[in-house]
Length: 58
Image 1 (cartoon, rainbow, N blue to C red):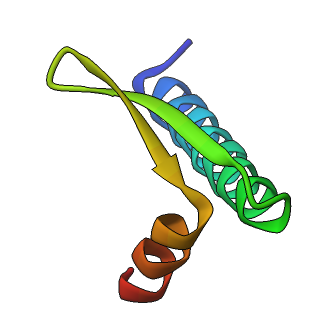
Image 2: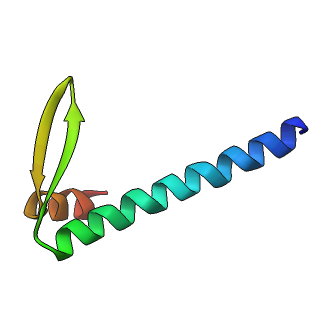
Image 3: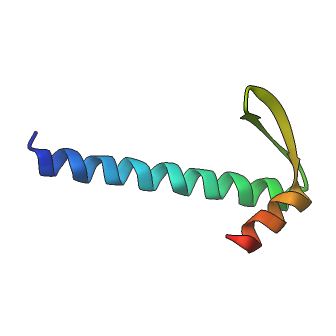
């Protein structure tokens, strides 16, 4: 694969990951659930209401 091919492939992968993250957040908000993430070595639960605030700010 050429450098251009690798760059384009990486862009597609990155785009897919961003889409999956956005869909996960949207689903969590819709279901009024919690999103569980790792932050600074700690397990953190983020409530749907807090996710809505983060989405508005972005």
